[in-house]
Amino acid sequence: MKKFFFLTAGSLSVLLGVIGIVVPLLPTVPFLLLAAYLYAKGSERFYLWLIHHKWLGTILTNYKEGKGIPIRIRIYSVVFLWVTIGASIVFLIEDTAAKIIMLLVASGITLRLMLMKSKE
Image (cartoon, rainbow, N blue to C red; front, side, top):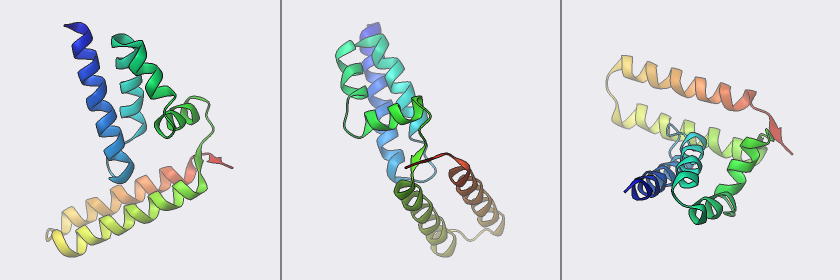
């Protein structure tokens, strides 16, 4: 039963991490780190698959080794963040306070991304 829990929770974490790659406000790395932990507890096969995965494993390795974010990914993330936040503010949200909060969150995420180490 424990193994099933760890595998299910790990798979859910991987799914949320993958969604986080394209959804600006959903974090990727924390979910992938959680998935690696859960897979390590539940199945060596799934853990090895994750850490050796072409894209997901690279994200984990870069984070673990403190290599930073490639500049191309940083630019993509910031552009995607502001396009989605901007569209939400213009077309979906009417409340001024909510618009301000979204602008502050987007600004904070942008600042965090800009302050992170760049991977050459």
